Length: 71
Image (tube, rainbow, N blue to C red):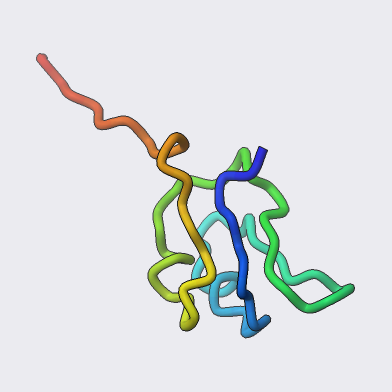
């Protein structure tokens, strides 16, 4: 299951460098970004924010729910 969709990637590698959990890779085949470890993504949005061509979309149904403490 993909946490992010990457379409229109230009292969600059900015998303790879900005990812704190190291889940994005550049394909050796075509040089485009892909999510190598979707289960480890923390959905921090850094890859989306730093992408110079807005190629990354965060799927809403995978967003982290807001935690509320009653404690």
